Length: 470
Ligand SMILES: Cc1cc2nc3c(=O)[nH]c(=O)nc-3n(C[C@H](O)[C@H](O)[C@H](O)COP(=O)(O)O)c2cc1C
Image 1 (tube, rainbow, N blue to C red):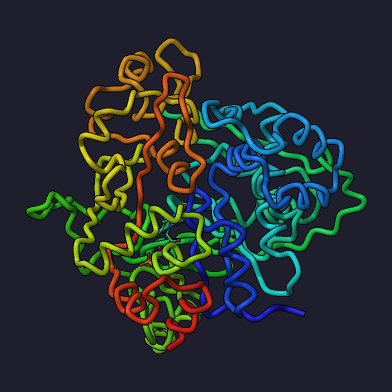
Image 2: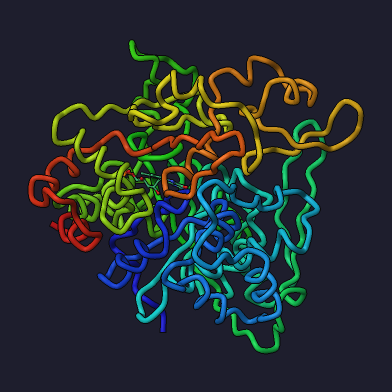
């Protein structure tokens, strides 16, 4: 029996802002909760090293089809009672084109645990979100999510032309691949065979639906032209959406606050979308009262909402960050900017100006530059003929040695470490430095401002859904 298309999708929000608790809350209330698959290997390690207080991660690991692997990861990382505050978290192996078995195990198990917990104890649908830009983590991450019977795979931040083929092949228990772009070099394939990780004779995969996050109808037409790249639906995200945004089309103009100016050319032609006949959802500023109705009237199946859920009680944000942001919404000091430079991906990203975060120049300047997580590193073929990996947010000297330019490093911030601090899993360094958070949200917070009046102590995911449904 095919399941109905969800009207409300809670958007994937990395790193673990849309964690399994939020996704489960949404899915049990009739929407579709989406967990983030970004850096999910490190999320798994840090939860285990924090002591897994309620035993959730261990319960999910006990359900993994290969218990030898699950036990190995548990033995290696679980710390009863949690690590001491003065210790640092262990690092996951950095993503590589030729990943080690251990690295793949962590990615598979991380995604499995997150989806399994989000789906536990109900029949609602659950999705997982990946960023196209993090190509080296995708194959193993999707396999892990499919082992937990994920209902939807959703991908943004790039052109996800390979995912429909990949999930079809994996669901048929075949070896499949994801292509990795190499700067200045020929692309290479990351191949994955499910049989290497689990006994496939005991697995029944169901092919998940695939939704591509796009900004306009042109990309929809491009992806839909061929069966191997055709998504099952599209999420059309406008420029006010939280997280990364696509840059404006054409020559970029900036306003007085140095923010990119978006115009009508950056909006999708919804009439064309309706004509194509593929299901689509609208995202970016749809987290407000009755917005679902507006989207339906425009021909959409529903909406994808991020910011309103990111600020709900169940999200992964620390209480401190959530309270601070809600406070700024109440007293009118909420400030957010679309920063063209901060993200090493090169995409614009929305950053909240919040005290204590690297959005503030003094906090940013106090951070010792280092790159120990490296999810946004890209492979590069060096002039010497060797493939190396680089991220424009890493320290300048190694970046320049990898044929980078000084200009590319300017204004870049370390998203990996900052995003982990948002969820209370930030790194503590041996020299005593604690990684500072960096918070993204959408710029349209009218809905949040209205909802906080009804729920001055904060709202639940279910409250948010009722509000959107009007
Ligand atoms: C905190 C936060 C983190 C986000 N992270 C991601 C992400 O990792 N991947 C992604 O595709 N979209 C991400 N988004 C975008 C959301 O999934 C969603 O499409 C968007 O927030 C919708 O716009 P809205 O914020 O106006 O509701 C993020 C949004 C927020 C608020």
